Length: 552
Image 1 (cartoon, rainbow, N blue to C red):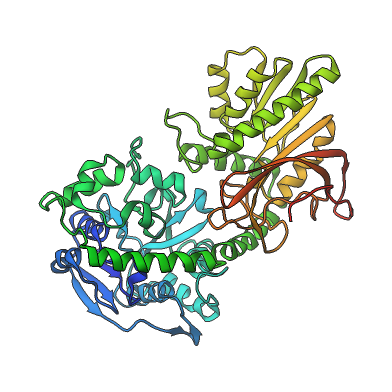
Image 2 (tube, helix red, strand yellow):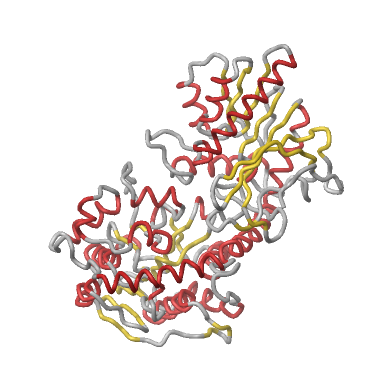
């Protein structure tokens, strides 16, 4: 007898307006996929406000709706947001009954039977659990000790909504508990449930016409309804699913085969009502500081991890850092190239990249002219080589050395680049010696490193005559200066809201003098700034040196 019963649990409708996302095609498809793939003995959906509409009428016969009153507090701590109430409901239900909990936007690909002999099964979110261990999919035996400990931790629950503690108990805490209690929970890698992720580039892998997402080893896909709703899921009809050739639409089609193209399409009164609700929520979101505050909690945890790196042997830390960036490219966390090659993100393309190439081509040409000889340009974190290739084309008097930590990326450039003026080296710029050169470029590289890593890199830059650093910054600077983070795909500020902090080299713990050369408004949320470091003025932690120009 498996430890985990084949009972399926959902939770929906804990807010009267359903968060502006009523029961829709995506929910019907996800429930159908779970029933057909998991073959549960029973399916329960717990609600406080019952859904309505054509898609709910289509779904309701497939499950047993259970009306509840969601908890408004836990251990005396208020649960102000419906999402946090749902977090508690799922834990209480699984502790009581056991079974399989799924968010209503989880699409199941294959049976979970091989997982049912464990006591608790969860999945990582992010590269090697960088973001945490998520709760959109939980498998548990009744009374599982891990879940009981998890619920007990709500004694210090402190979120008041979409604030800095938003996912503290739902994503960050289970990661910590799993590490502290390794025998009580089985944590699967991100491929199991949570990849692709919720970033715009990752959502395109799910919903936009693109190369197939590999389904090998994948039990399910969390569809990230909160981020995908407006662009991909709102008012979706079977006809649209049949017309669009994306991963999600291919996954969904079998469950809609018997429905007409316009099934569930809203009439004009419903469309008008939904428009008013969505606009109201959009304005509230823009006024909220939620996402930037949430990142602060992540940065605090990252600071703890960074301190642990100081006691781990350097080769192990370097190998882990290399694996992280290998996974970023492998999984397309910075987006995907239409040609299927390596892709370093939108920062390598578009208007900001064009301005950078134009300005830096002029600067490098002037440096070479003054030197009266070809100059060696060392590009640390060369990425997909889109920028470097253009600089080589524009400035005949440079010799280019592209450096990156990802061996497959370097091997690709060595094989594909015919220009004899270019060479490539696999280098961990944090742990290894840097190649010799006259000019060093770091374009949107430091933002992906921890503060300790950045300090190590800065200490090596004195060997170059000129150093140019480019970083992205939010349009609204708020929160602690230079918050820490672990090495990874993300940055210190919330690029969606344009709030938070970037890497401010003039401030502690870096204290590096620099002058701003130019800036480009990359989006409504982000400005990209290029500095020249005054490399003779790299100081220690106690220096009072400030940048000549910095971001405020």
